[in-house]
Image (cartoon, rainbow, N blue to C red; front, side):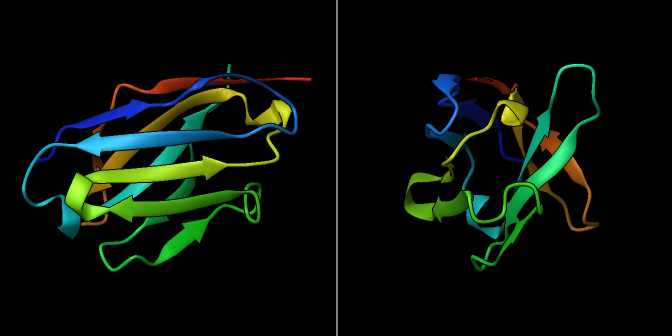
Length: 117
């Protein structure tokens, strides 16, 4: 398994941008689908986006057109570029790797994103 570490969270005003990074250890990083999830205060964790080993992406409707995923396998890192941020994007953001059974079973520690109005 790879170990995942998120970074890049912080406080930003509505309309601003942040770029989150998910850095991984392990030589097999490039073979994993990596997902970004978020958990707003008092709510359940939800899938925001994912990127496959081949670079295909999926975005939740709530972030489509505003968030962009990319991966740099040479750096073992997946990036989540977040633009036009809204207060409702406030959450702890987690990255996770998906196993062969399509289960996200390996999680980072999370990074806080706070969007002020």
